[in-house]
Image: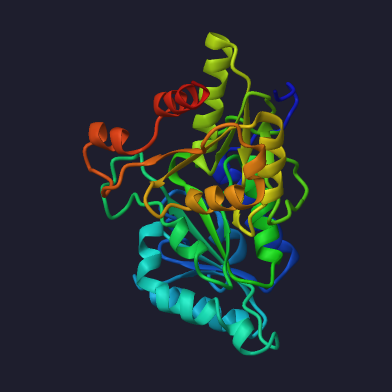
Length: 333
């Protein structure tokens, strides 16, 4: 619980503050993307930044995701630290040559003599009625590519600390922000005014428990916490909620230590279940922690279909609190 005098920020305010503070401290940090200047970004994250930093460092671009990432990668090689915004994560597919074949490979191919310290910020996930081309969860695709780091914060405190760490990192980072979290203040610690870092590759226990481990990402962490609260009140079930925070590098130890306590694991993600990132979690737990499991691992994830435009159908496609609750009860038998 937050104290009465705790400093609360929304998720988007925490992201904006992280970028502002890094840009004040380091002239090599700049922003590039569509509608990020006068308009302040599609979701309002960069509102007011043009007035402070000017058009040289808040760079509007044409509608060309491939060009945005190409420019960012090229400038990163020369010593800049660009933050490139791709308005919707669906459109990283348009820039995949620059992301997968250039930014992700350059450090390796040049034997470490060239580095690409860039952050690609993008809005992922559904729940807004934005239909199939603006609602996808594509984190498993980028997590599969060697050379990339993938970050998915679930609350304002994590969003600020992880973004600062991502900007400071010498590798390309895909930073995925869920649309339904931007104005969200739930389930967070006080957000300090000063700059702070949360190390990439370190998960977090959002709620301790002893009966079952719930591993989740992004907005599904908040839905898992809500499900855990309901089951605690209604049935006395004590769930532990693990937020992995960064998909790559993955903190597998925090998951293994959790199942040592509980003996049961349920993995929750918004992306379609087939080929989803949680399949990697299941595989690693099976390889490294099988002896600590008292029951088969269960996954709760999106249906294997495009995200529907209809809000009713969309809510059926995306896991909700009720589906997470059912998964927990089914696993506990």
